[in-house]
Length: 379
Ligand SMILES: Cc1cc2nc3c(=O)[nH]c(=O)nc-3n(C[C@H](O)[C@H](O)[C@H](O)COP(=O)(O)OP(=O)(O)OC[C@H]3O[C@@H](n4cnc5c(N)ncnc54)[C@H](O)[C@@H]3O)c2cc1C
Image (cartoon, rainbow, N blue to C red):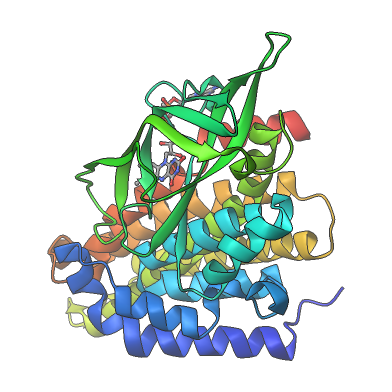
C-alpha cells in the first residue's frame, strides 16, 4: 500500500496552496463580509487549469486525476469556502456530468469552456417540495415538436447567480407514451427565454457564494438538450453527487485545517496565568484532537478519490468522507472559536467566519442523516 502522492499531485497541491495564500487569503475576509463575487480570482483559477484537472486535454482539461482535483479543492477551501464550493459544483458535479453522460456535441459546447474556467456551471436538484427526497421533483418537461417545455422552480442553487455561469443542469419529470413518469436530466443555458433567476438568498454565512432560486415558465429548449439516457436522469445525477460528496469532504478538511492553524497560532501567543494557553492541557488536547481528526478525514476523502480514479466502487467511501469530514469540521470550528475566547466571537478574527461556514457542510449535497441512510443501505 502506497500513501505517497505522485510528483504531479504534489505539484498541483503546491501550486494551489501558493495561489490560495497569495491571491485569495488577503481578500477572503472582505469578500465574505461584502458578498463580493471574485470574478478576477475565478478567471485566474481557470487560467491555472483548476476547473479542468480531471478531464482529458481534448475537452479543455489537463488530464490529471480526481485525487489532484480534491487536493486543489482542499487548498482553496482552506482560505475561502465559497470558492471551494464553486469548484465542487462546477467541476465535480456539472462538468463531470457533461463528461460522463454528454454527447460529443454537448461536451464541445459546454464542457470545454467550463474545464478551461471560462464558464462555470450550476446544478438544480432541490425544489421547494423536493429536498432530501430528490425523486419528488415537480418540475416538468413536456415534449413539443423538436423542443422540451419546462415548468417549475428550483431552490437554493449555487453558482447560477454568477455572471460567468453558462448553464444549469436540472432534473425534471416527464411522461412516457405509456403514461409512466420518469425523471430526465436537461441542460438549460442561462438566458433561455422563460428561465429567470428568482430571489437571491440572504444566508448566515458563505456570503460570497451565489445562491439563488431559479424559475422556469414555459421555458423551451431543443430536444437534444436532454443529457444522458432518457429515464435515467435521477440516477445519473445521484452518481455524480458521489463525487460531489468527496468534494464536500475536501472542502470540510480545508476549513478544519484553517481552524486548526488559527487555533494553534493563537494558543501559542495568548498568555493567561503567566503562560501561553497552549500550555494548559485542556487547550492542547483540543488541538491534538483537531490534528488527528483532520488527518483521518483527509485520508478518507483521498481514499474515496483514489477509488474513483481506479474505477472502483466508492459510494460508501464518498458518504463516509462527506459525513465524517463535515461533522468533524463543525466540531473543529467550534473548538477553534472556544480557544480564541471572546476574541473568537468578534468578526475581526477569521474563526467566527469559519464557525458560521461550517454548519452548511452537513446540509449540502445530502444532509448528515441522508449520508447515514446511504451508509446503512450499502453496508
Ligand atoms: C447554501 C446552499 C446551497 C445549496 N446549493 C444547492 C445546489 O447548488 N443545487 C441543489 O440542487 N441544491 C442545493 N442546495 C440544497 C441542499 O442540497 C438541500 O438543502 C439539502 O439536500 C436538504 O434538503 P432540504 O433543505 O429540503 O431539507 P429536507 O429534506 O426538508 O430535510 C430537513 C431535515 O429532515 C431530515 N430528513 C429528511 N429526510 C430524512 C430521512 N429520510 N431520514 C432522516 N432524516 C431525514 C434532513 O436530514 C434534515 O435534517 C443548497 C442548499 C444551501 C443551504
